[in-house]
Length: 186
Image 1: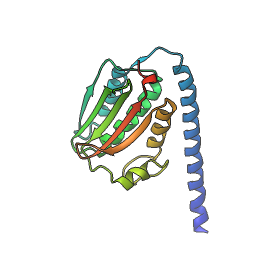
Image 2: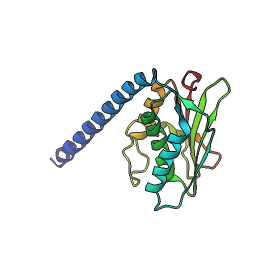
Image 3: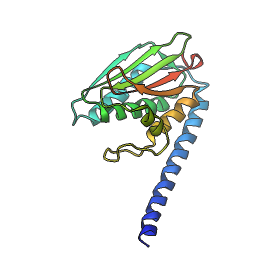
Image 4: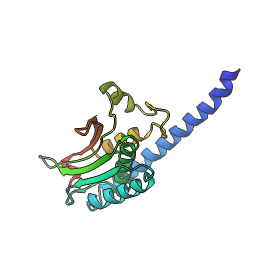
């Protein structure tokens, strides 16, 4: 009997999460179609604004947030979607960093672009990298979050023909990279 009392709130929460995900993906699809017909979005000002807001929210911890960005990169990506992707990854990095988070952007050979967020935190093992890419999976329940962020970022990036790649940062922590193809870079 105690199990069914616990199961109902859990089922309600799962249903709410599913509704949020479906709403966000529907919004992203609409934005994607609109972005296909819009002018390129200069990326650096959006990234800078997003990172500044997250740094203010994380001010209780003294984490240095550095931007190493090619300021000429423009993407054919909706501004709100770009803020969602960069914001989510930067917020995660700020949670886990020991002292520094670096957000960088550069052009790739062949015309694509790479935006990456790196931290100097504990990082993840290869098995943990696979696990965190499953929607709703959280490795540390003591840290605030839903486990939905990376899944949403991955889905948004893929919507624009890109790819989210997670790996070890040279700084020791996690490196989350958004790779956009040449047809999304102006």
